Length: 246
Image (cartoon, rainbow, N blue to C red; front, side, top):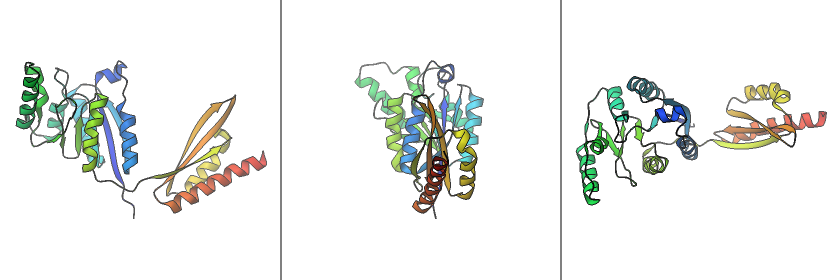
């Protein structure tokens, strides 16, 4: 039996939707999830609006094994993720004593004022657990199956590194690539029949263009070697059949 562990990502921030900031975290999370056998099934991007964040968090956490959020846990007025997550779980958002002490000590050591804005980074939902931040001290947090992390790529990646060992992982997806010199318009029908005949596989079709010609990269994915080999053999036979006919 294979175990499927699923995940979703919620990207929070007006700056992403406006195009001012280009997201770099989605691809990194997808790479890590694939490597450890977790299926990243959905990504949503929402603005810095409490109702939108609450609705998205509640929808995703009910559907997937894990939810990862990025953005909105900084010191400014529009960093409302902590409050929104608390509301989604129906608990207060309050200063966490450990986070407060860590931040207070960090700013004192650097001879910087621990302003009210900076204190905001110590707020999190009651009973949340810390996600370590080895770069800028201010922690992310986990509550239920939701992991709340920074949007800055270097900090997000460092936080994710500390989260990964705590995650339940599933059976990793195996994959094989089959080059195909024909366009999707020709192979689409037969490829659909192969997919139907091999339900334990996922067959992806990716059109390419180069040297004035269209061609297709076909990728077969499966959780067992047996299913992968069977699906790949069927796809290879299809490609060979078109080549002979051509």
